[in-house]
Image (cartoon, each protein chain N blue to C red):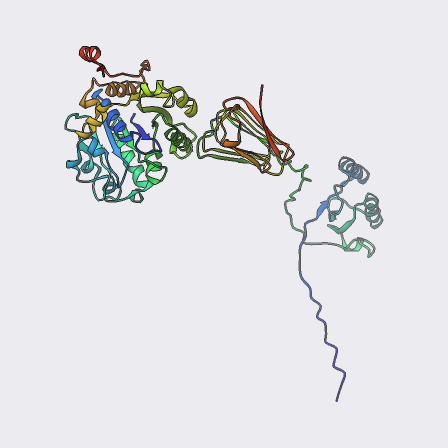
Length: 232
Length: 271
């Protein structure tokens, strides 16, 4: 028996694919044209980096050596030529880029390097409420301080990541420093609060000294003890 | 331009229905064409207060569901030809109300009347939210006690967020109407003072209606207090409130019962 199996033939697969290339159309004098290229490179040095470039020589009549010289000059400027078109096959040697035919026009969509993407608006770190907060309303703002110009009604609730400032009467519940910010404080023009909390430590209306009632006051945390003192 | 005014409170028993009837009648007496709409589906009362309970054939729900035409459900008051009632259904509940149905009825009423007064049910559920949904103005009825004031505060918050006007970024014009105010008890400190109420609610005052037997008496005979005894203290207070609603400037005062000479002379009987 024949033990050696015939090696299976690997099929060479080929696919067609088209690419968009920059086409250079040099004009005489070539020296002047090269200066133009230099000026472009001076403005934006990386302009041709990594981009396929094709030389279209149909507008000029160059000898074989002149073509070789032109390709070399471009290479010096870090521009690699992918192919040449619009020239007689006899003028192209094997050391030069291959001859291309059948190019089609297309629109070059130049992608501008995106300017440092419009920075996302810095997140607001405070919330201002110009109207009274009514009974049953709940204002939750965990990114920072909450300032209320009106009153906070009985049965209303303010939850803030930072401090809470109430320029009217505070009759509802105020919870400051909910993200573990023990430095947060609660300030109000008139304290009649149902509940005050800072970083989870709370006092209910019953715990708040009657002598403070109806007066401007602030609450803060002293270690694990909530202190409420008049603001004067 | 027709105005849709909701009479609301949050809390029950503060005098929404009485106030709706009294304000509606007073507006009609001034020559405005008024319809009062009862939104308290399942617990209707406005028909009783207006003395129209025996003439109800079709109701709000029939119109919402297309069973009856609006003109069939409207009941004209026998005493005031400018006053109409759109009664609620007593056999259904608030779930029978749909937002689209209410919208189309209100739009229809706007073409026929100068004032559309919506008598809201108590609470903050469907009936109350639909009653306020299309309002241009609101009268918040409040008693001088903490529970009523807190509920009113809640309702004001809803007026600022759940109405069509609020959702369009406009404002529902709001007025506080204090009812069942007893100046004697207030002076003894047994009631919240007017200043305290207004400070808590931060909303302009429309009027102060004194506690009075006249209100109860009027309700019992099925007549709005402004119609039953226009000279009584609560009636005068409602009429002042209506004049303020119509844009007049009327000095705010708490009307007191007028006592006759003999009453004043012999007011107190010695023990």
